[in-house]
Image (cartoon, rainbow, N blue to C red; front, side, top):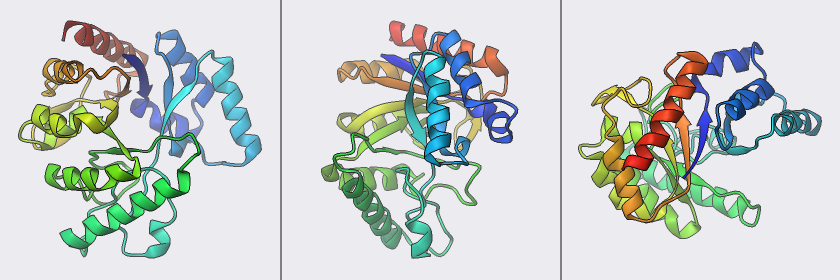
Length: 255
């Protein structure tokens, strides 16, 4: 198992410029992470010069980037909006979007993205997603049955799964059973935690209701051994990232 982290706790600091991507990378390296994750929100300037500077900052910190998270909205009723984004989420649950049409549009958008990125060396990972701050509505495929249907239909296009443990604990009746249904498609794992069932209320990893030991045991049973990307959103600073990393490593070993 290799460990990285998406620093949700530091989103405001990084997007406002109070913290640089290089400083985040140095923190992750200092905490012993194998790599760091970034949000597309950290990259307002996507010119070649700005991207080269950001890459150099990460390299100077002695680490690298595992995953970029962004927020494509393939269920948006406006075709122009559906074509604008790059990450493999299904899209928002727009009020006017019915189930059948939403599933079809999500599959079409994800499949087209897979065709566009074929041969690029990028692996697309579709997440059992909830709701980022960048969106108005929750994810269209937040209900587990919709996530499973879309994941199954996009698998032939080579799209893998980024399984979010906290989202599964919040919205699935049995998160371990949900994981088992897509276990062969899981490429990466998002480690997050929620205070309660039925709603996503982020807490420090290991202090919520997510059954980490059972979920990790299910992954190990399937022979899975890849990137666990912590989605650290406890708002407890560097100490929170360190505590989350220690929890994930120890629980993985014990599972």
